[in-house]
Length: 189
Image (cartoon, rainbow, N blue to C red):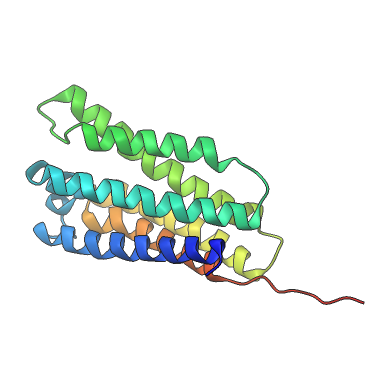
């Protein structure tokens, strides 16, 4: 198995494990309610929350790096994923406990940083490839739609497990799709 194929397999397995783990983790509370927010579940299950955060960041970051290297020559993903990782670190190391205001605000700032920067990084991948073909055009619109709809739902319904998980699952699916894709090779004489 070639190196790139092996990286793709690792990425798919990591994303699949993160998806299954997230779905299992969400069983601790109703995912459609505020009590089902991943961070709220983390107050009762801090180790499981840490595992969720590390798995989620690693799966999305690994798939993103593969896609950027496959389709673009820019290294813009490096500082963006670094900021995203810092955001996840803040999310995991500070409790979502409103009684402890400093930790609560650091947690929220980290969560927002992780979510926004990861979403922007993936959106930018598709936007920079927009003119290449219709798949990238569609994924640009889908990513923008998911981010906008998620933000509106967050404002309306507050934080829920579903609102948090759906963009992550969309990221896994969209990145796996472009990473699985084989480039068309044109033969010329």
